[in-house]
Length: 412
Image 1 (spheres, rainbow, N blue to C red):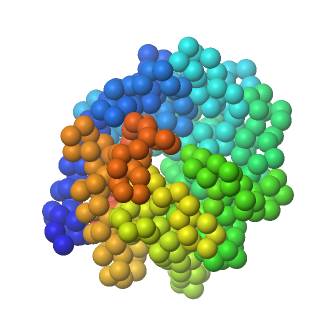
Image 2: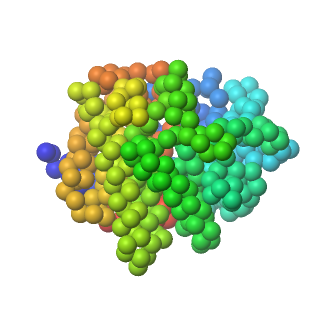
């Protein structure tokens, strides 16, 4: 194996550093005049005919907050542009909170999504860490809105979708929004020092581990309002971008890293407790890789499987590879087990040879089972969040959110 792909080598660090800079250069054209993020096309040109989504705007604020702390030129202005969008066209002055997005003509995209609001918390946390003006107030508002409308203290979980006016709550409950809530709460706790957000993240994690353990370590994604798993949800639309049918190996991998981060930050000297969470993380990761990686004779991680681990949607989404890179690195650093280093090298090789677009920049966002470019779910290259994080998380301390870790230069 080329040393460029092997963890802890000088060559791999240099590869990731160059990839990080290339990604940051790729995304400069995201801001619209009012700050909402354009969806980026294959070469980084904005696709102005698509909605300007709140979650993409948040991701770009987060990415360029990291860019600013890494010394990437122009990052401060790009963060400020995204924050302008979050305080302006994407913010609902009348009902509070944030629209799902705005249309190309400036109309609102209806509904209030937990997913998007979790990303507002992440964006504001990262912008505050990077010292941007207005970020503190944005974070305070985002946490207050989230507490009021999405967090259920009794259940220890978040609901999913309200109507625009926050008067009608949808019956659907989902783990994608709760996963990004864990990420957001870990970041908010790290940045504000308020322990309650880490406690909440732990409550969500405990639910997820139990559901996974009861389901052969394949995480149910969709639930009724009573939090009963709906294992047949979207069986007729299996490649839905946010609510696909079946298990999503990429989420099993992502949960494994978040659980590890939470446990390292919160279990301290409680060795047995820490071990319990790390074992759960390893089981989630191992099951997801066994089900998803090279499952059909070609490298890559399939998008979804059925409840026995058989692939349903064979497409490879770029974000699953990014999370596999992150989690294999983190588990290697935490456990020292060689299998994670071997996985990491495989993922790096696949990234370099297949998923990195060496011609136009960024990563191909969707490939088919033969690793040919496809655009049915994720055409273009919408944002940089997953890809950029995977150039940083492998070599930063695993017990802290990535923005504070970069700020404090806590490299491994």
